[in-house]
Amino acid sequence: MSEPATRATAECQNVSKSTCRSRMSVPGSSVTNASGCRTCSTAVARSDASTSTPDTARRGVTTLRCGAGGAWRGPRFCRDTVPDAIPPVRIRPNRSPAAPRHAMMSRVRAPIGRGALALVVLLVTCACGQLVPGNARAVPERLPATAAIATQPGPAARVADTTATALQEFWRAEFPAAFGREWRDISTFVPVATQDPGAPAPPCVNRASDLADQAFYCPGADVVAWDADGLIPALHERFGPVGVAVVLAHEVGHAVQSRLGVDAEQQSDPQRFPTILLESMSDCYAGAALARFADEPVAGLPLGPEERDRAMQALVGFRDPLGVAAGDESAHGNAFDRVSAFQDGWLEGAALCAGMTVDNRAFTQRRFDSEADLARGGNLPLRELLAFVERDAAEFFGGLAPGWAPPELTSGSACPDADLVAQGPAAFCPDDGGVAVDVAALQRIHDEVGDFAGATVVAGRYGLAMLDAAGRPAVGTPAGAATTCLTGAYTGRLFDAADGFQLSPGDLDEAVQVLLAADWVARDATGASDPADHGFERIGRFRTGVLDGPDACR
Image (cartoon, rainbow, N blue to C red; front, side, top):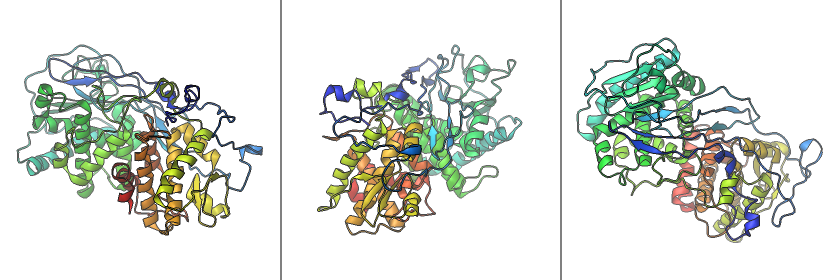
């Protein structure tokens, strides 16, 4: 979070969020070479942010004293309520440029350990248009069409083979249905043995090793190629078959753009087709393709609600580094924008993707607005965060229920322990109208993901308290759905708040991660949530609140 702009400069130095990750980030750049393949550099964006010691003497900061064993003194809500962690994806830093192409780069490394958090911590580079080392290589005018990719051993390779074939078949039917034109098969799908020194180079690069950790589409050769030794097995291991499928579907989405003439239009009018728009379109096309695979199952490529969430988790793993603005030449989209585009493709189909423009598509990522925010990675220490959320969320939600006095945060309430724990790291107690927090659990969320992940959970409980105060049900699936939407509305208010704190770069990404990983925000006052809901639905409702405000949360 960014602290209030009206506070003194000295105080500003202590309360901003985005630096711990941005220290690990290298700003990207974008180049286009003579063969027409667009590339861009990317950066490592880390979410294992360290937090500084809060100055508890500062005015307006809630001082919570810690008792024996790390439990917060006061009522009972002091126990660990956070499930097991999902290990983070580690991304290899960018390297030097090569032949231009749309490329997805990711290195999925072994986890560095499991914490006590059931949160997807997805650390990322931008999805397409990465730079590949080496010099540009002449592209043949036309390559012979391939009915299928070369078969390689191993389950990940089989999934890649299956996905490539299924995508070709999908677009043969969908392209004429959506656009009234015949689909021209992609000339070549190439799995590349990047770890074999003797492996032949694929089109558009000089050496097979140049493709390490990447997948790309090269328009000049009409080829989709990928690292069959590193990237694809790592995606398969981390996300399952759908991790491979969403990456290849995204690259094929760039081939769709090429066939619709978008590449040529982008070259003549780059302001009309910035990189971030092209990447969103391709994420959208990926959503459309995977939705079809869910409706018409492909053998070897399971795609139910859980797999759909994993596909979104994989996309989150390719978000832009912190501080990249939507208008930057290298921008590809933050987590919120990328999963939003995927959802739109899934729900609305390919025609909507092709209709995306800079005028009808809102991009939410932003630069740091101060050196202090940059220096701290935008992460408020937890105790300061809770003080600001207590004040700011109370003001917002209080305005939605005139005459209601929102409660202060406590570490316990009149409700039984079990009722509080059932709701997660923060809880609303109908018995006394209070909002209680498990500070130890929130600290783990804060440390693993960032401050706004915890702020999202706490804001959700204020939303539930507001429903109860307004005479609306606080129990049942409609309560959970409304609470998720209201949490989005509160978040949307923070984009350009006239007073109070504002969103920092990465805050929306943190909200997306916690919504994908856990149903805490969607739980009602008994701790129950709709069993039919998954991260996809939660993010959809959160998006509604962000974009349309609280009136849309009825």
